[in-house]
Image (tube, rainbow, N blue to C red):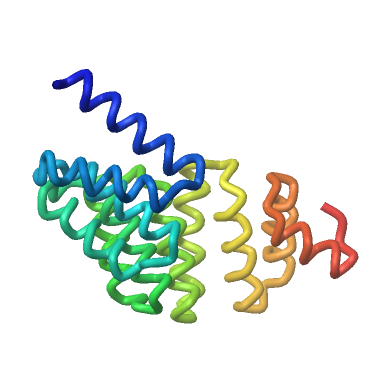
Length: 186
């Protein structure tokens, strides 16, 4: 049974990685039928729903994963992302806060919380969160890009340009396009 469970998990994840999210969801449905207390199955089905743009259902599945495993930092982080996608920024921040409380090294939670603070025009807090993400992962192009945007919104164009250049060198397409459009080399 354990070997079958490992095989089934790998099979479902492979479907997701290949972009077969609807097929993966059916596999996760079956896994949940077989073991309704498997937090990973709900979490992974939530990922598939999120990839298909069904954030409401993703939130439900992440919630089930959290109910089954209250220390599931990734589930809080991804539920926060789904709330962010729906424009529920305050709830998103609460979930990112919880993910960080559980795992203070959760780079993605800092970065995404920073993006969310930016959506609320709280650029100073966005910068602080991007600073933390960059401190934990110095090659995180997205964190540099979003910190650059926040600096730009505050009128600190030199720091914004510096961050966008770093993001561009690290491969961030948005930063590259913006700098190219402005005639700025990176």
